[in-house]
Image (tube, rainbow, N blue to C red; front, top):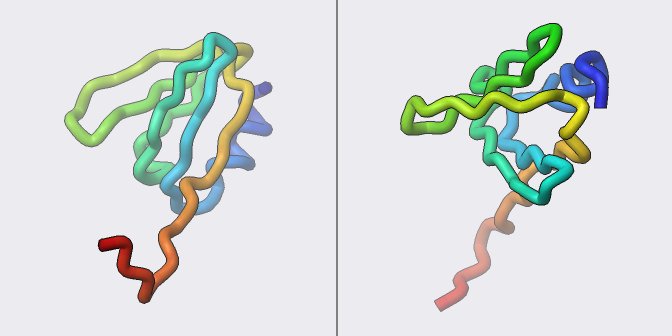
Length: 74
């Protein structure tokens, strides 16, 4: 993916899952947790740790499925 397509995918609030070419998945709680630079994609997790990814290796960005309200799974 190029950086403009990554920015478009992350234009909503989130949360998102970013998947890379090696199969790793990164949970993005909100689009504010991502910095799209010229050569890198920086993802901050909720603990404050960072992952730095080459945008070329991003293969998909998907919204996290929302749970349906009113369904009890007990």
